[in-house]
Amino acid sequence: MGKGKIIKGIGGFYYIDCGSNIFECKARGIFRKKKIIPMVGDDVVFSVLDEGKKLGIIDEILERKTELFRPSVANVDQAIVVFSVMKPNPNYCLLDHFLVLAENEDLEIVICINKIDLATNREYEEIVDVYKNTGYKIILSSITEEAGINELRDVLRDRTTVFAGPSGVGKSSLLNEIAPNFKLKTGEISRKNSRGKHTTRHVELLKVNSTGWVVDTPGFSALSLEFIKDEQKLAYHFPEFLDYIPSCKFVSCIHINEPKCAVKDAIKEGKVHPQRYKNYVRMLEEIKENRRY
Image 1 (tube, rainbow, N blue to C red):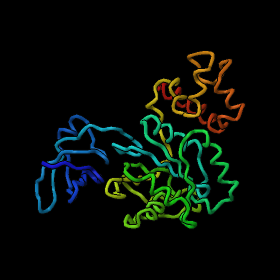
Image 2: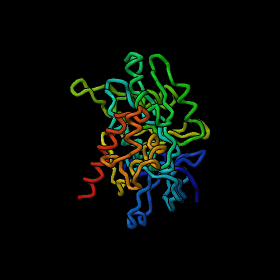
Image 3: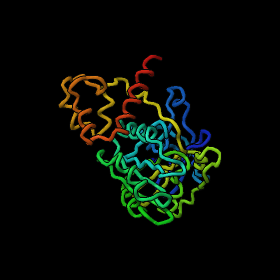
């Protein structure tokens, strides 16, 4: 019997890092019967079938600290969400969907705004302005200008981090700059639709240093909010709302049409960015729509 961490899963095979070796394993049939699917990041107990060929079978999945489904990865401490200033242009609604998902899992959150060399200071500072009151750490990065790389290395130390964002924003290129031994494939932006081409085909856990792991994930274009069943809970996933929610007149306030809403007052006073509130309203509608089906 051995213990290790699943670092990659392809076609029903799971690759387990147990320190000095990597074993290729399949999961026992009992997992399929119980509808349990092993995830990258899982800590597992496995039996060795062939020591020489490094083959084994997964016997047990240890308790997960956290669980993300898109990207599919377990036991993450931190999320670094990467978006670019342009090529492709930032999709604020998509970014906020992922931030809400990360908040729901109680992850530490870092926003990385990449490709700042393609824009003026004013252009990327407009993006920073949207998130400056959230309390999230914001890193401005550029491989061309070697900006933000050391900051990213610092926040990756001693953590298991999901490194996520839409295709084409430069996730793999940044990771190659942080740790050249990764040698991840990179791609170009499609001229037809200005969207990135997928270069990461599967979720994989990569070792940054002796104690740090990072997950490079396929780009995503949509994230469901089905995990939020109560629309009143959504506001608590927006950290800049938290200081104002207790001051709303109604305990059941969802910050739309209610009178004497402290959150809406904070927007008028410039303490909450209108773009964030706009996306909050869109998400509320999505949650209501999900409830109908």
